[in-house]
Structures are given as structure tokens and as C-alpha cells.
Image (cartoon, rainbow over all chains, first blue to last red; front, side):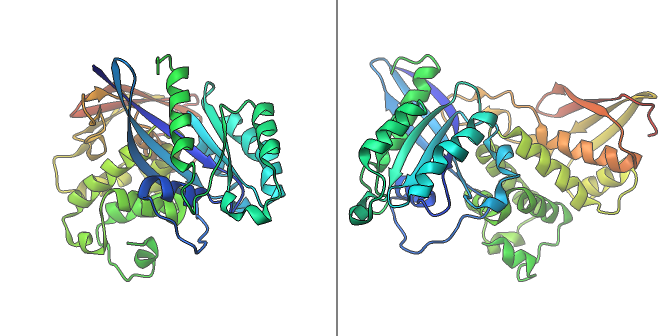
Length: 182
Length: 192
């Protein structure tokens, strides 16, 4: 078995309050905080991930950029996007506006400034609040197809449901785009 | 450790280089960005009693990991860093001498004037290169990174030094473990 190592800069994007920081905290630290504290600027976290194929062990260092969703950061955000090879586009299934902004705002900005062959995944978060749901699973799939996202997953940062999957699916897709057989 | 403790003078950071770097990080990445760098560097308020070079090395290692592939961000941090090192600096040498005298190590910046519109800046034993050249997970794969941080730093010092808006290019022409060289070419006639 041979070893290969990579570093991927990945942006986590979406409107304020959709749960970007909570998704990262759940994935990296396996924890969830009920209180909402808006991200100011960019919170950056590194996490090493190991994956294996038939003959190769991949060690990938993810550098996750949790970007503030507020409007006041619009001017500096393009600078943060530069060098990203992947993105996690997050909306809140209980807020239609956050769903609309994926295509109208976040994807457009990301594609303008990120690396050309970058991959992105669409995430509908907060499925633990199913009673308050405003965006259906079907609408999520349709948008993912429409924007050519590599996958669509619904998650709950609160319960941890599907959170790991969204990061792993994205990393595998990026490795494939780099010509790896995984 | 939160940066607001620094800003409210609840933690005293006497070394001008460390303080300038923290202020530059704050300007570009805001509070959560600075705290990310500090957290990865494992720096808390007690660490600020350590020798400045130790703190600086920790900050740089953290920046090298977390700001990987973020050249524009690094350039901007370098530019702001130069400003905070010598806010009232007028000559290029003001910035570099402040930098040298506040770091107790064998660190030197030489300015070589090649011609009227061409300058080469040699950075010897640069603290910002420490740990920068290799990706240390398992195989020490060379990253071959460009030093955008220094380009930003040099860019700001040149603009201040000239006191005019002159177009110039900065090229990283030599990189080794002990020495980096930057070639600066002015499009207009140089006044340095």
C-alpha cells in the first residue's frame, strides 16, 4: 500500500445562521452548542482525514474556512475564496431565503474566485426541525442538479445525522477530480 | 485567548513584531480568524511571557497550515504587518531595521540597488520561512510555496519609502532554507 497526501482548502458557505459553524464543530469536535454566536471574519480549522482505496492510503489535511455570512464581509470574502478547491454550500431547510441565496449569491461568488476545477456539495441543514421545514428534500435535489453540485445531503448538526458523510463525499469527489482512483 | 484581551490591554504584548503580526491578522481575518491562528498555535495568555521569537515561531507555523493556498490573504497580512511595524516609517530601511532589532536571532535584510529602477532584497534566516518549505504529515513533500506574506510586506515598505503611487513588480527569485531574494522592478524611474 502506498501513501499519498494532499491539502485541500475548503470553504463552508451560506447565509448567516444556517449552521455552518455547527456543522464544522460537529464534524471536527463531535459537539453541538445551542447558543448562536455569529462568526466574525473567518474561522479556520484544520482536520486530517485518512481514506483508503485498493492500493493507496490517502492522508488529506482539510483546511476548513468557516466564512461569516453577514453582508459586512462581502468585500473581503473573495479574498478568502482564493485557492479553495472545494465548498460546502449550506442552507437551512426551515428558511426559504437561505435556500434561494445558494444559487443567487453563494455559488456565484465562489465560482468567480475559487480554483477552476473545484467541487462543491449542497447541504440542507437543520432536519431535526422537521415540523418547521419550508424546503422539501425534492427541492434540494433539484437545486443540486441544477447547479451541478457533486451531491446533495440533508444534515442535522444538532443530532450529527449525515454530517460526516457530507465532508467525506466532498473529499472523495475532489480526489477523483485530481485523477485519483478512489 | 481572545484578541480583545490584547486590544483592551489586559494582556501586554511588548514585542512590536508579535503585536504587529496580531494586529495585521485581526485586520484581515477579524476576531475569529486571529483566534483560529492562536488556537492552532496553542497560544494562550500565559504564553506571552515566552521569548518573542518562540511566540512568533508558533504563530508562523499555525499560519503556514491554516493559510495554505491563501496567497491574497497572506499578501494582505504582510502589507498590514509592515504598516504596524513602522506606522510612521518613511524610508524602506525604517521598516527593516525595526524588524531586525526586535528579533533576537541571526536575521538580516539586505537591500541591493542594481539600477535606477531595479532593487534586490535579500532576506537571510527569515523567521517566516521556518517550517514553511515542507508538508510535515508523513513524507515531507515539498510544498514549493511562494512567500506572498513577504511580497505584501515589501510592497508596503516600498510604497511608504517612495511616498508615491508607482507601479512595480515583485518576483521571488531565490528560495532556500537560509535565504530568500526578491527582485523589485519599477515601471517608472526609481526614487529610492
